[in-house]
Length: 374
Ligand SMILES: *Cc1c(COP(=O)(O)O)cnc(C)c1O
Image (cartoon, rainbow, N blue to C red; front, side, top):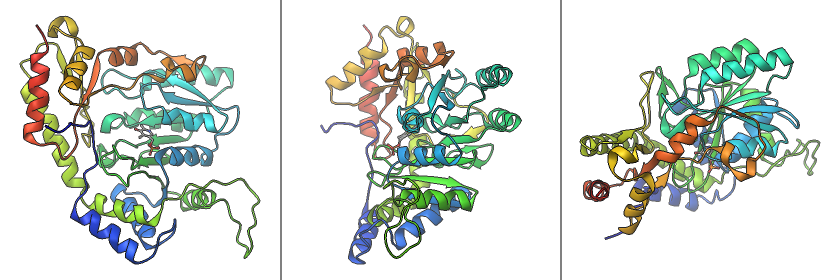
């Protein structure tokens, strides 16, 4: 029996063909026709004007925050319940993440807490420079409420859609819902370039500026001339070719991950004390990861016992994100609430959800979980 991973990459003949085509064309650089095409195709898929391919989702967050005006000493509202990269990008700029709890109804940043925090800060004249939202585990945040707040206070909204390519909010694609949107093509995401990211926005000016900064901020001279600080953040053309092939298969990947989610629900429906991550009525997730919450009293075993039982038979499962306000690296950061995401962390587990997961493998996961209590 082979190990079952949480969310491994799935590549096939099309990926191989397009990668080798790029290789044979000798465009083995962070420029080339596949970069341009990947940017165009992704922007079209997401329904935004412009996109720039970058070396990672973290790089995209860094540039996105910088370009909406975040700088040293600023405060930025960030959900506590997310992967660390959402907040490290804030710290790279010398700004301070202010961690906001999630709403139990969708696990995303709680608009009511954001409203309270903004009202208090407006009175004190200390508004944050940006609000970062995260479309967690492939489901968008509650954007009607969040955008209304961002508009009311004139604060830019950075959408971290790293996990949510292909999801929608009231019919609108994830990534198109903020001032800028960010995607990741890390190996575990719904599509991958082995490593990579994309920054998207309606504004051509903003995306052009991101492209300039990501290419060492080279001023237009024949020699190397630099008047501002840049970064080396571009994606290679080879990886863009891989990304184009993956993007073509996005629809079937979403379909497969949705079927996996439904199969887990059906197979565990009779188990007391197991709840699935709530699905909000306002949108359609991309079903990136299937996550459960375990009530140890009702189920007869806790989250960690399930995880260890799975590991015992070579199945990878992971606790849900450990809230950032509980991370040692962010000790001392301001926190708004925090009990809701701490509770989900204590009880939450992400199950293997890779698009190549077979029926037999899914059965192995389910049987193992069912065997844990008693
Ligand atoms: C994966 C991820 C990132 C970072 O993307 P990388 O491409 O790995 O740098 C950022 N935010 C969230 C929510 C993620 O899941």
